[in-house]
Image (cartoon, rainbow, N blue to C red; front, side, top):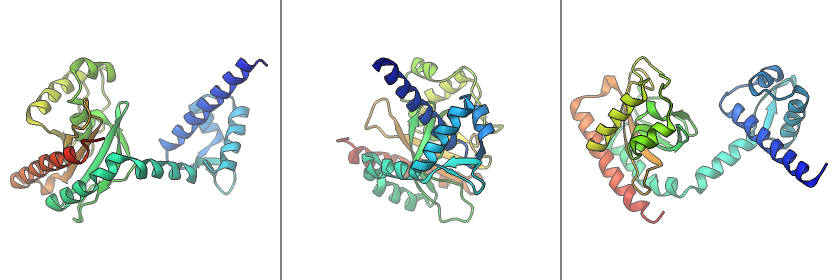
Length: 256
C-alpha cells in the first residue's frame, strides 16, 4: 500500500466514524448491528470492528448482551464543551434570563446547521403547561420560528439553494412548499419576527427573532407559548420582550 492509499484509507475510516456517530445521535436508544448495517450500508465485518473500537474508546455503548449499540458518554462531553466554549451562548445568558422572566414562557437560543436548527440554550417556563425542550434538539428550520427568523436574513435564491422544493411537515399546519415559505419569509423581514403556528407541535405557538451580529444570521432566539395561554395582550408582551432581547443581544455580541 502506498502512502497515498494509506492516507485515503484513514480518511475513509474517519468519515465512517463520523457518519456512525451521527447515526446514533439522530436515533436515541440502542440498535442492533443488523439495523445499523442496514441503515449505514457498511460491510458488516468492518462495521463490527469500528463499533468495537468506538466502544473501547467510550464513544459508543453496548447493552448487557453486548449486541446492541448506542451513543456513548464521550459524545456528551464533546457536546457540552461546545456549549461551554461558545461565545454567543455565554454572551446571551443574561438576556435569555431576562426574557424568560419578562414573558414567563419557554425561551430558546438556536443555531442554523444545514437545513435544521440546533438548540444551544433553553429557559423553561415555570408554568405546568409548557413545551418539551432540551439542548441539542434538532428540528427542520422551515418548521420553527427560530429557523424562519434566520432564513429571512438570506436572499430568496439562497433559500432556494438550501432547501428542496418540497418540505416535510411535522404537523398538519406545516408548510410543505418552498415558494410559500419564501413568501412568508418576506413577511418576516417586514415585521422583524417569525411565527411558528403549531407547525412543530400542535397546540404550541412560537415567536422568533434573528440575532444581527452576523449577516446572514446563524442564530436566533424564540419564545414558545401554549395556544391555550396566548391572549392578544400576552402575545404583544412576548413580541416586545423579544425585540428588547434582540437589541440587548446585539450589544452583547457586537464584538464576536
